[in-house]
Image (cartoon, rainbow, N blue to C red; front, side, top):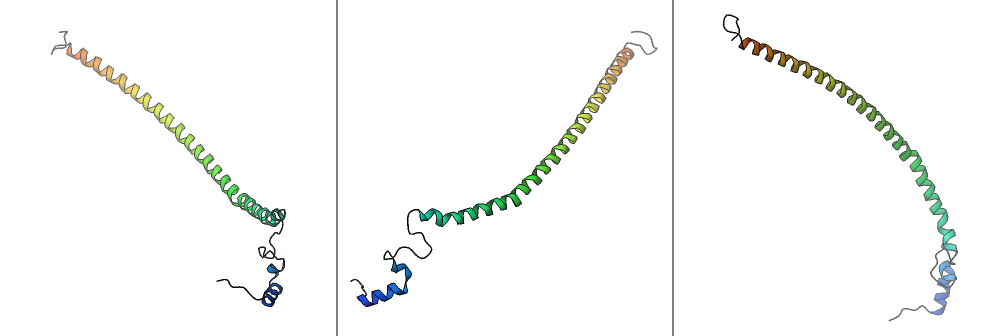
Length: 124
């Protein structure tokens, strides 16, 4: 069952609705009607969106990236300072270990000498 308007009703509908006036019934007002119009229809919106994205990026992302870069630089400086202090402490610990090693060897030598003496201080 098809619903068709009588001819006078259809004419009234076309006068009231500009979309129906061009006869195609497919292009609402403001939409492109020819193939080349599509680009000119969407380009201002795309250009505006790109400008908004660039503005957002430059105001937020670049600023944040610079702040992160500064934080990383500060952390690298801190890491280098900790590494330098650790290297100094390691060298100091190695010197102390070397000193203690020499002291142990000295005690071993002295104990060996004492073991070679009898109770009266003479050689065994």
